[in-house]
Image (cartoon, rainbow, N blue to C red):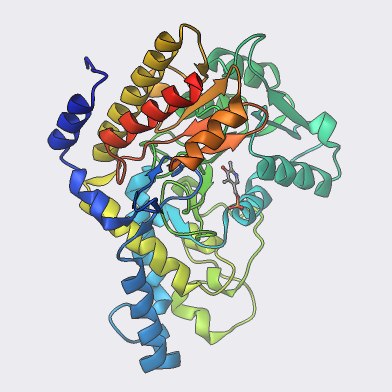
Length: 426
Ligand SMILES: *Cc1c(COP(=O)(O)O)cnc(C)c1O
């Protein structure tokens, strides 16, 4: 698209935006009496207006039905998670039975590694992206140690080439192939939290399988952001949090995906609890674990209904907005417009003040641009914050900005770039 660096043009894009009315369904934080420019949905998505109502409904069921709420009412708690899974599944390209909504993200990563990290004396290594989100690094290290291996031997991290910020798919595939005799698991982020690079999950999965390894994907920054196709890409397992692009509130409940081909594989270890027991017999309280068929069989504990309600509030908005494909079209346009405007700021300044390290190719990114500030990074970021532009800062010099299609506008992006320009000119 041919973009223009004018407010009129941004207003015109907003006018043509078929998703523009969804902004009203979110509570935008206020700054100096106006809507802040919130470009931080990669870290904490905004609150749906409906969230209070969804919570109030559950409080009222608790009040009126008390323990009967598990079985009675419009949405009995016993199966409430199924409604949420049904809404989440299409967003990650899964069958409903392949999704379960439970726990929080790092906990789920551990539970899934219990099943899918099955090291043997020869095949015990894990390949992951270098600079993965710290929680994932800690989880992997502890899993490796739990099995009696040493992280320095067992964990292979892939880093960008000299002078580059993002990974070449070619290097990822080559590393998998080269380590095939010792490889047990490939565990990758769907989108790297720092650079915003969206990895080629399908190619990585294929290479991992060719190497005789399982492949798991942490979708923390991808779920609700880009249109992943977990089932079709044959990914073995995945997990995500719901509080970033999924808008389910701080510490929101997490989702897992287990490919249906693993449902009946009794050789997979699980850490089990009664909530993963087949539902029709759960309350017989019999000894001997008999798992529910599907991803639900990985559940451990009683569903946290209030957290599920918050997630459902948000997923209902996703559904009404036409799902992830519709959102991605706008997300790509917003992100490309922001990219165009940041390049214009650099041109104005006569120097590359903001180096965009997120891939330029649209297929290799979602709604996030990571900028390396070549000078005055912290001062620029503080200026943005003081002027109501909410992004996020990563030491020593990175700013991440995420225009989210559900609630950001083209005018938001335009105004954010104007402030970047003022900040760079100070
Ligand atoms: C946000 C994020 C997490 C956070 O994990 P929690 O268990 O929800 O605290 C973990 N991994 C990745 C890749 C993330 O982006």
